[in-house]
View 1 (cartoon, rainbow, N blue to C red):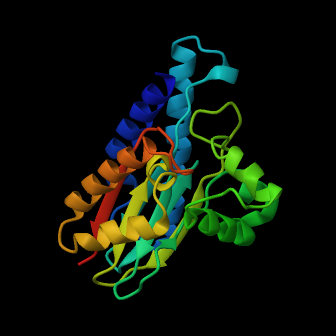
View 2 (view 1 turned 45 degrees about the vertical axis):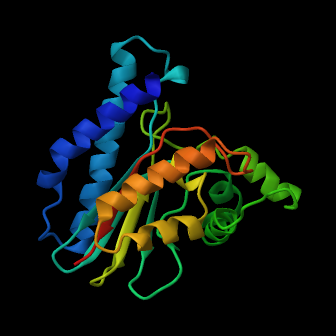
Length: 232
């Protein structure tokens, strides 16, 4: 319930403020600064929800956030807090590209570059049983985020950008999707619907739910959200 309240609060605030803070005519640097400010303000909004209902700060409602603004020049500016992810599938490329790195143990222990390599390794694995203990530790702690909207400590939004081209696809997903499905499975579903982003997103949710109830080592019952964008 706390997580749902936090998520609804952050989502409502960001949707209301986003068009005013980040116009499509903004420069890349302006958009990066504005998206960081929006996430910091959303964090404060969620913090206030905990205070409003008298919830101790150590048990305050928390949520993750992933937002993307595509500028008029085709640059996508991304803001991320927590373990939601943003991916790109480039037109003609067979690999699903991780544009964000989770705020978790892999980042804390190994830094941005190696942390991303580990994230991609886990995202492409159907089984984890033969992994070394250091990777098992990361798998077992995936639910422990180093930062989230609404936490007691201050946050540092992660800001990224990339140049898009016609035919590229962007995917935003919560961990209930990308923890259940491998990168290969996600890619195949997105490519199955080349002209229907909504159907691709619905199928990602459907397949994630089915996987979460299976005997797969990846199976994880959780909230599941996905947005697919086809760049034209």
